Amino acid sequence: MMEQNRDTAGSTHESVSSVLMAEIQEKVQACIQCGTCSGSCPNAFAMDLTPRQMWRLAQLGEKEEIFNSKTFYLCSACYYCTLRCPRGLPLTETMSALKRLAAAEGIKKHRQSANFYRTFMDTVRRYGRVREMEFINRYFLSMKNPFFPLGYMPLGMKLIIKRKIGMEIPKLAGEGRFDRLFRKVEELEAQ
Ligand code: SF4
Ligand code: SF4
Image (cartoon, rainbow, N blue to C red):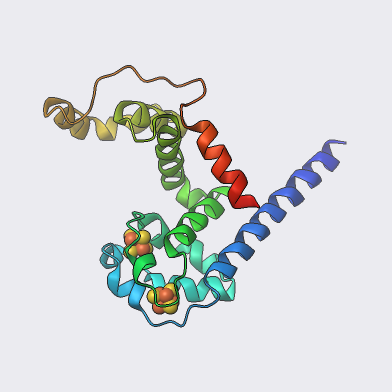
């Protein structure tokens, strides 16, 4: 029975990944490799693959090469590439889809980035914007390593002294104010 459950969980996981990958390929199918997105991206200097190269790999379904790269986690969702793409492709959305796919596949290399992205979005879902104290607490808890926050102490102290972080008590449970709105959008997107 357990074996059967494991098989079912494994195949469900695989089918979720395949569906996500197929959606990503569809989004960038019409890319003509002009490079406007790479030339427009403010973070391209730090990326190991340019956005244009990423779309080509996605078209070819080269998941391994895609996940060896940190490009999609360096996307700050500024939408500049999306605005400038001559084919009108949803590029920012595709970068987000790659982050979701990496999380769905449980790629260890991207665990820290995946947790950062997920906990950031969790606070946005709750308040419609990020609340620094709650976000950072969620992020630290997600890493399940009591020593992990230590590396952030000097930066945290600076931000607190400069009053860049609100000192409100974080709420880590309960439904957020914008949860229903996000769920509705997800429903509409799935149609
Ligand atoms: S700007 Fe659009 S068409 Fe040009 S390389 Fe980027 S995704 Fe492809
Ligand atoms: S949305 Fe992401 S990939 Fe596109 S230009 Fe901005 S940072 Fe670069």
